Amino acid sequence: MICLKCKKEFEQKRTSQIYCSRRCKNIAHSNRRRKLRPRKKYLNVKAYREIILSFFGNKCSKCSNDKNLRIHHIKPRFLGGENSHKNISILCDKCHITLHLEEIS
Image (tube, rainbow, N blue to C red; front, side, top):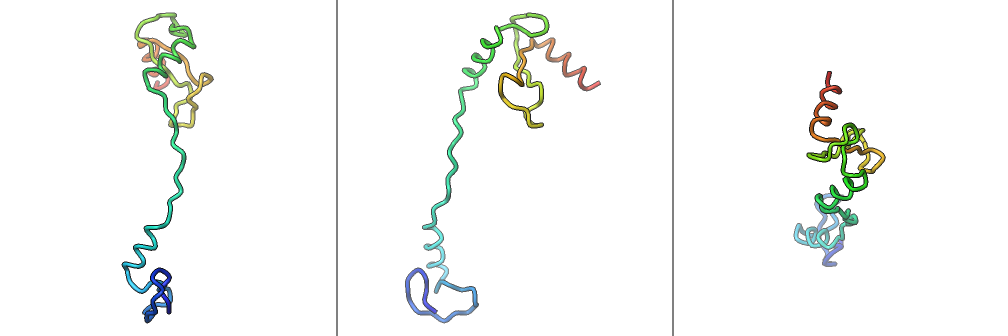
């Protein structure tokens, strides 16, 4: 049998053996190019938060409070909810906590 990497003749020990040594196999496999996925471009978290808050008018959607605002995902992200304005509401701390307590009970 002839090694696919170094083209030297060698005695095949197994039927699946196509390289003469482990070294040739490692060299051949290290030359393979891995398919790289394009990186996702993420916004800075603070910048994203400011964009979302200004989109919704910097006020709580329930009580119109403008302090201690939270971004609330209507359908949670871990359940497949999107990170878009259709799935987001702005709530103050108090309204956010009461909403989650109502969901639990």
